[in-house]
Image (cartoon, rainbow, N blue to C red):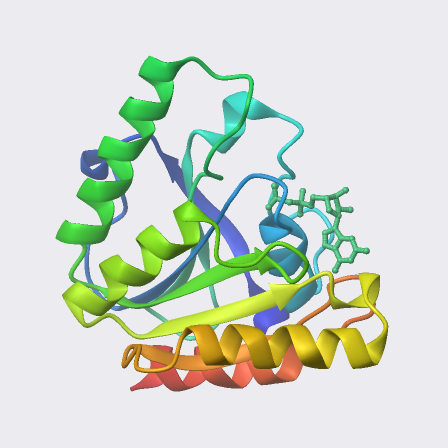
Length: 197
Ligand code: GDP
């Protein structure tokens, strides 16, 4: 799969608006500002594919991107915890995310994007728990690694790995930087394994 072939397919604000549930897709999740959009843009070598969290209206939507292998898609889930949205909107968001995750047959895996300096926050733990319960393969991108010195980044990775000991759904834990283009091929290879399986 050539990830630079990714193209915007459609947006959905609820599960009924999603494209047909066939083929294979992998979804990206993360707290707002974790660096999810930047990670998607780096992986797809497309600086405009995923919108950054500065436009809250847009980030409420689930965005689908097609790839050059027919039936394969990447999915950008709305960023969690945008501070400026009202509580009802957060609840609404939560419900649509739950619907998507629990009903989507073509979902092959989840990519959880975390800031390497602030890993395993409540939302992250909730997503990991969800993957574990539903036996959905999990990939974690510990991003913004360029913000730490290499020794600190290594320590941070060890700490995350240790905290997630015994989490069986965790298939890939990748030190990542969209800025420095670190971990891109590792992430692409893992995505391809899931999408082509
Ligand atoms: P999102 O809300 O999770 O989609 O996060 P964004 O991709 O919009 O990134 C949030 C902020 O972090 C932006 O200011 C990005 O420029 C910055 N950022 C994202 N990825 C990286 C990275 O790998 N390194 C650095 N230094 N900054 C990053």
